[in-house]
Image 1 (cartoon, rainbow, N blue to C red):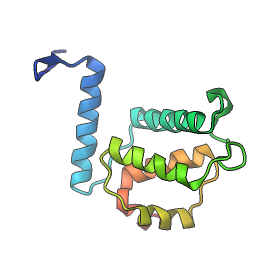
Image 2: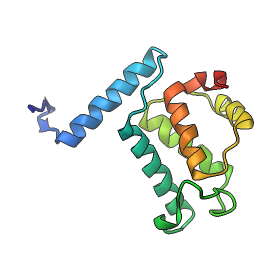
Image 3: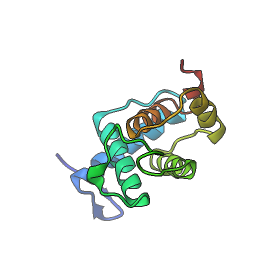
Length: 134
């Protein structure tokens, strides 16, 4: 596979694939079409959330799983949730308003890491249209 040159730097295969994936998500979202959630995106979201809570809550990564309660087990709070939203908005170039996420969250509260992963995947996939789900 021949990789392109950009600003005289040769992309590694992984960097190249990430750039293509990011461009696909950005292009998809630009036209308000649902982004396709690939296994790569699912894994990235899961790892980001696990790493975030391990660091912020000062717990070992092995103590976190999909059934871990964010509030009861990790002493997490809503500010952490907002931080994560901002991380994903930047990472995936999302166009979503916090009030839309808030409205969705009232109808679909999140307690566990697994529920948070699912919500974040829905946000990436549907952006502001998340409010029209259910």
